[in-house]
Length: 471
Figure 1: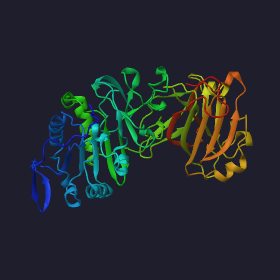
Figure 2: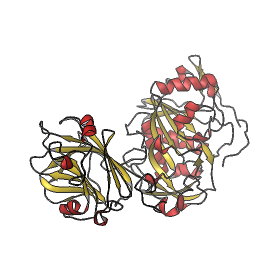
Figure 3: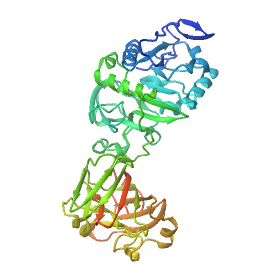
Figure 4: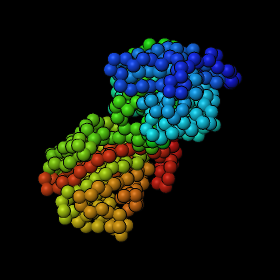
């Protein structure tokens, strides 16, 4: 647990002088084939975790498995430009309080700016509250915690090395932090906490428990990564207990974070901004083809290319209510006479005509009639053609749609410009429940899609929302 009392350092770290710079006495010798070095920093100026020795031992073992030489120190004088330049990553292992002076902070900022890596473990978030750069780097600052207890973590990214081998629902016992803010919109979330599975979580206290399990609603994050200030940053809130460092799953999680922070493996650490990938550029997990034709996955482009038809590729894994759907699309024909569309609000069915008859299509075809052209709600409402024509990019270039559904209101944005605002009045085509899909229109229509992302919205937000439908 974190103490509210600032206490002094229990022991002073011994140091060796190498090239006029102070480096740790516990500096590990270069093992056979060791290519890179990591510095583990565990200085504490407030509460001191008794699991730090176990964490150091685990990081040394994990580093050795990846031919990383791991040095350890609690001597802040190691934070000089010359000494930090020796390391691929610096681990803040349950550091607490103000551990670096102004010159040392500046040296570390310069190290990160030159591409250095940072790995924060547990109380790394309970460190340097008056240093804005560090707050941005670690991602969030500690606020409080309940008692140590079991909880379920929801893994949101199975492609990152730190979470690749973890189950969707990861159950473990640790001390679960509440943070001063939820960094979800600023970092790339790897795992979140399901507050319905333990007591004392306060990050999602404004939502009913029945809705707190959905990551898109803003569950409190517990592990994340980001590109920050020129460098790589990874943080995990786990690691309070000694037992954590003997747990194979947590060790694998920590090793993956270390591999990312040192640059041994690349990973997508772009901010989530509340959107989740519905197509990852490689597989059609969650999607199903209805009717003839289909879509070919092109991993090199991270895109889907329509083939034949008339069919529909629909996302069967989740029925949707209020949401923002973003995707890129591109027509291949030089004259722009390709045909496709994005369907919303239709019931589950293996018949593609069910989407036509019971849902709405946001058209892609710049050559048709006004109510059947790009940006139109097909056969129901034309786009604002002047705004559409100004925003539309020519065939062969990628365009982006944002399709926003709240209650019975349907808005269409083309390359960031609103081109349609439609309200459904037909109870047989209600937008409050339904699925999304992509049309493959026919052999002569070549349309590609990529970057398909979705964020669920509060149904009480904005005009057209249903009264009393909030959460």
